[in-house]
Length: 262
Image (cartoon, rainbow, N blue to C red):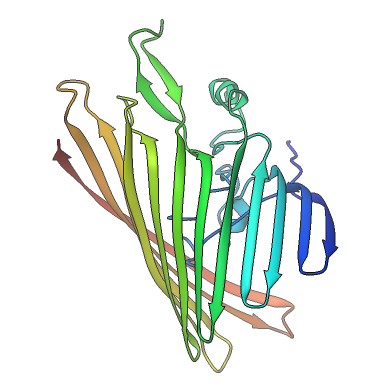
């Protein structure tokens, strides 16, 4: 068996602000199942994904501050020790050693609400949640694991039209790493989606996330092979028996293609 502590925190509140310190996770963005801007907390993929992505989220030691001034929400976070995605409970020595070399992460978000519209701007200094393989002839094994240290800029907006919510997430990631070559590069990601609640309280949502995975070629070094992906997600949920029973559905479909560029 195994165990892990997912939530244990102390909250201090005063006036319009609240400070939470302890074991917790943080989710950014508006679109369920799209991770263009949901990049702060990593995931534990040894856990079963049912219909809620939060069940997979790994907790971290974090200081989280939230302030609400009229229609403005200001949030900041500081993570003492960054973590990366977990794929196995055993034979994790290489990933554990890599994780032990990581330091702090920090960032913030400012969200403004108007009638029917919310807009959020984000910045963070992060490590990549996914370790990548880098070919390095200076290493005795010829290959090593690496993780990006990059700057993240994000935009998230929600537009309400009655029962319908239209959603957009957009991200710019500066100095991420290419697989194999280990070169730094910048790229963009975007996601669009919607949520709709019927008069019978059926909750429907769908979205598509556009992202890429760059593979630096060793020979010739100037070429980059880019895998372009679309990740589609759709969900449905409904509460019964005075909200004591919740029935939900989640569907995911991912497609991609490879292109070569300089």
